[in-house]
Length: 245
Image 1 (cartoon, rainbow, N blue to C red):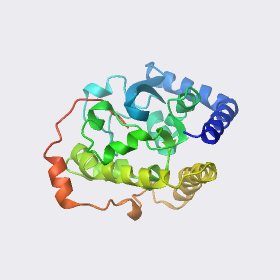
Image 2: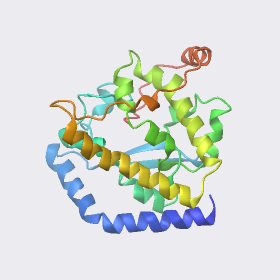
Image 3: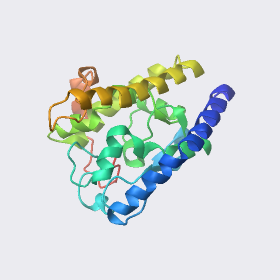
Image 4: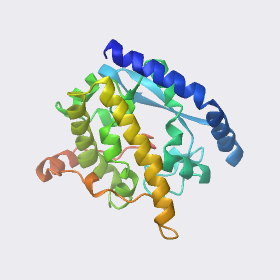
């Protein structure tokens, strides 16, 4: 990470924590009030050069969610709480990661970090992503805003994620990193906010009842390499690792 990027992260995350402090406090109260469980969800992820760290999120599921189903979260997951569904739709549950950025575990813009069990399945080309500092958002995250809906439509969400979605997201992340600058990072952040909030507002105004959830962008469809996917799928175990993305 360059000094300019680190300075950008410190200024951006610091301003975010200060300006969003009232919202962070309100979200914490809402999470606690719903079921009395923990406010934060912490999970081990793999970061820069394979270093493990704890990622922070507002809890959006029932406290024992990891014992009730798949490690991935799909659309309509019954484990998601009411306030959790709202936070997930607007990605407000990710805001505590501003502290991960301040502590140096993450960047504002970079590939989303995965859990150790999934990283262990990366092939050599995919492991190049571990040379990047993970982030809160990037171009792959924007392209796959409808990921949970895509997984919900799959007969085997975990296998679909590992064999097709994750490799394509890594490819997009590496392609962006090769040309990234502080200014392009700023544009990615603005594009993320536009996709999440301006687009969501338009969807709420125009969507019919019961269809307010964001639809899957046709651009999100991964470029499937069927031979590669089949080979990868053969090595994917059924795992109880709680990803709860």
